[in-house]
Amino acid sequence: MKVITKISLQQKLTDRYNIFINEQYAFSVDESVLIQFGLKKGMELTDEQIAAITRQDAMRKGLNMAIHFLSVRMRSEKEVREFLAKKEIEQEAIEEIVHQLYRMSYLDDREFAKAYTNTQVNTSDKGPKLIERELKEKGINDFLIEEALTTFEADLQIEKAGKLAEKYRQKYRKESPVIQKQKMEQSLMRKGYDWGIIQEAIAGSETEEQEEEQWQALMYQAEKAHRRYSKFSGGEYRQKMKQTLYRKGFPISEIDKAIEKLQEE
Image (cartoon, rainbow, N blue to C red; front, top):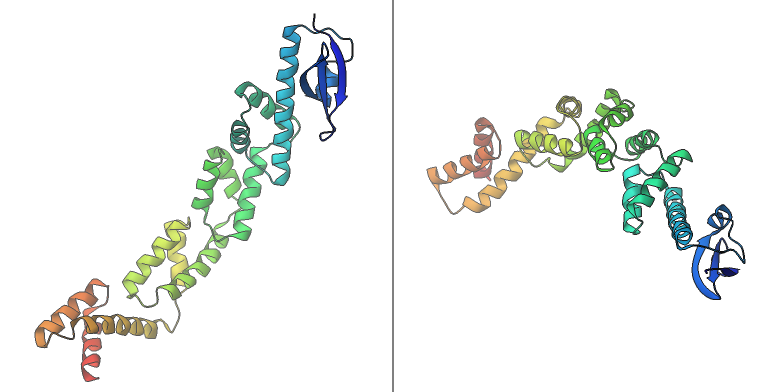
């Protein structure tokens, strides 16, 4: 016969109780589990009842951990499931915990997707495709992602991409116009913007000083090439200079001007 002979409150965890059976410590339970099963001194327990109590307590502990995990910030269902799995909560208990979290309104993937999207739009320079990829990684389905991204309107995308385009234009100002544009496009694509938005953003970032910047970029690259090929003379020097600068995307007519300027110095 298994009889509860003592129930004591834990010192460090004031919502947990130690259960003693036949004068020996047997297990501990959450206060809610104690109340649910009506545990009290003198109560007889079968092995099946003890197994049910410990299963319910494991679920309750997992639920408490999940609620604490969600108290820091909103999480997706997938993130909660992965968290509980790392805490070695059994799959059966995870299913019940997730069900309880939805019932208690702690979990809502639709609201999570909207909140995550708004946060990224307001605090980062990410484009919609990058945000979409991150939401998929968090387990959000395509329908909810599409719904959440409707708030990221095209005008706002162009505005944010335009600021990035100007930043990248300065970063690659020593490249030829062709290479500069390619690198700007690649950088904006990595940020998650689509082709149409990228083209509008790049066009909008062009300035009146761009022609002078392009000449400075050509001279910068020409001077680098000159240091490499100055040991050559005549036609061989010009050929190597032209090939190098042409591969970097500069037009032949401008390359000739740059070579003449260097030879004058």
